[in-house]
Every structure is written in C-alpha cells, then in structure tokens.
Image (cartoon, rainbow over all chains, first blue to last red; front, side, top):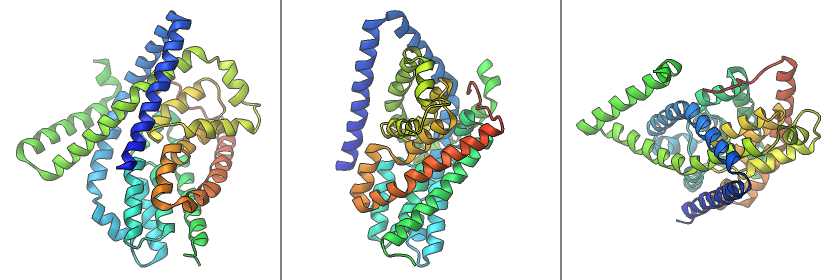
Length: 170
Length: 177
C-alpha cells in the first residue's frame, strides 16, 4: 500500500539525518558526542516507564473501540451529534495518521460528512486522553489539561469551518 | 529498587498488564490477544523512531547553545519564533508522544512557553507526512481548509495560553520522570 510506504520513507529519512549528524558530531568532537549519548540514554530511561504505561493504555483503548462502532457513531444522521461524538471518539482514541486517515476515507465512503471527519481527525492528532499521563509529566497537570481543552475547541471550530466550506452547514 | 519507588504506578500497571497478557495467551482470550497485538505493533513502531529521537535530542543538548535558542525562540524573540516552531514541528515523525520530549528539550534551552506550545500542537496538525496522508484520503481541499483554519488558531491560542500561564508564574516540571 502506498500509504505505508510513505511512512517507511519518512522513518528512513530520519535515520539518514540522524546518522549524518551523528557522524559529523563524532568527527568534530568525540567527547561531546559521547556526552550526547549519555544525555540520550538518561532522558530515555527517565521517561521509559511513562511511555510503557501510555502504550498499554493506547492498546487497551484502541481494542475497546472497534471499527464497527466508529462507523456506526460517525455516519449518524444528525450532523451535530455526529460531530460531537467524533470529537469525543477522536480525543480518546490515539492512532497513528496512517491508520486514522485511511479510516476517515472508509467513513467518507460510508456516508460520513466532511465536518465529522474533520472533528475526528483533528482531535486524534491534537487531543490525547490516553497520552495525558505522559503529557502531564512534561507540562504539569494544569497546562496539559488546558492545552487539551483548547485543542478540543480548535478542532470543533475547524469542523464548523469545513462544514461551511463543503456546503454541509447550515 | 529506586525504580520501584519512583514509579509505583507505572510498575503496577505494567505488572497487571503482563499478568493479563499471560492469562490471555494461555487461555486464548480473544480480546486479550487483540490488545496484545495492538500493543506489540505500537511498541515496534516506537522502537523504530525512538533511537533517532533521543540521539537527536542528545546531540541538540550538547551542541546547541542555550543562548542561541534563547535568542531565536526565547523571551524577547519576535513573531518569527512562531514560524520556526511550526516549521520544526512539520518535520516531527510520529505524533504528540514523540513531540513531548523534544518540546521539553526546547524549553530546557529557554525557548519561551508560547513557542513550546505551538511546537507541540503543530506536531499534531502540521506534520508533513501526515498531511500527505490526509490529502490522499480526504482531498487537498480538505487539507488546505484545515490548515488555513487550525494553524492561526493554534498559534494564537498557544501565545495566549503562554501569556496566561506566565502571568501566574507557572513552571514546567523541571526534570520529568
């Protein structure tokens, strides 16, 4: 599939960039480079437990929300209830773009509105209930909480704008 | 045993999950196996991107001077700093969870809060590979409108949030663990 290939490419590019920068750094200053590896390792071991918990939460949440339920909720009759449900579902489900957008494409074929998909995809990308425990270790609870709430509002505004532009509103 | 003391919850959740997986696998519990499969696929994806992310953060930490970041992204830097944040976010691979450690590294180098928040949210909505996906499944018109609406809102809300939190002398956790 084309979609998965483009992700493979972006990962490859990141590896090439990292390798080049690392080699340049190694040639420029051995001591600094080994210090950088120590920094990398320290940061990783500090955050690894939170990441593990996030992965577990994501796996459980994603398995609890089956595709069939998504389709049933998001392809609903009422525009507004579908949009709000989409924003809610998008907030709790975390999935990489290469799963979320093909799913949006599928939903579009099943008759979901563009504004509903906008609410869903934007909240998937910006609002993270399952990543919240991780986010609060970095930002602190109040800031993480408010950032997510503001992102939710932004997603709804985007959905409304998309609705107007695609003739789904008013 | 310091690990146990520092992360009692993480350890409890991980242990519970390990037991759940062991039971699911031995009894053939379908839901448990699905969870396990999802967990494994995400885990593999993370493992592919993570070495790079943390090596890059390490290099950034050693080579980039705090003064440089402060001058371009810190307090007193102009509106251009937000543009840098957006462009930087565009290159992130993976999503929010990958952006958190990078955002924190930026903040540790004295980037201002508004820039850090812009970077985070844009890592959600402005990633280049992700936008290609979006456009291929929902069309370029959708992507263009979404960009035109969400980008200004994100930058504006980040700047306002930063102002509000700075006003209240808010400090980010200094050393996440």
